[in-house]
Image (cartoon, rainbow, N blue to C red; front, top):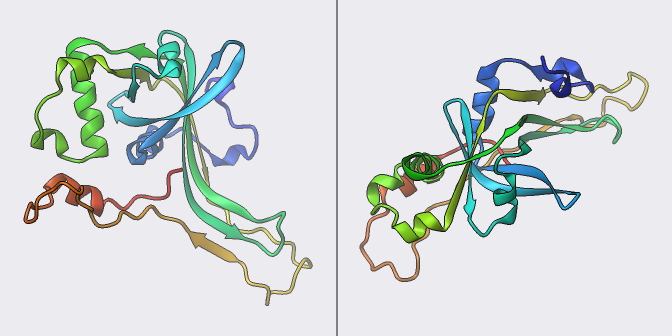
Length: 216
């Protein structure tokens, strides 16, 4: 284990299982990218998708942080908040969570690799949508930037403990427990200019059926 990625606070929560990393990334729709710009740290959210042993980040070519992240060491994080832990004191109250941190040098994709990555990203965010639409134009491709970050240096922390209340702190009549949190998709809403009678496509139905946990 890379010492830089070792969990020091509650180390028993750390997982070195690659399957846990994949599960966290596969559920994520947004990842936060951190870079140093002009001597100051900057962290911004971007659409994301895992592609095998890489993490893809998507944004506009006008996104300065994405352009600056190319070819330099970056930090990307994904967090899922799964529950609020209600203890019998505010100090012991906590959250259930799953968090992944990925470090590495980001690469800008071009050509066919970029087009394949965009299809992977689109299919992750909008399941099946690429098969329902035309391909991207050259202008659209030129306006889009995709970064690929290898999944080589990473750390996963999974917090699942319930409240640890001292026996003499509060009576058992004070309620304690967990409020689970989940991401719930609503029914698809057509754009105002969609004619009456146009069916909701399979991709939108799949997205509406997605039931992951809350991913801020």
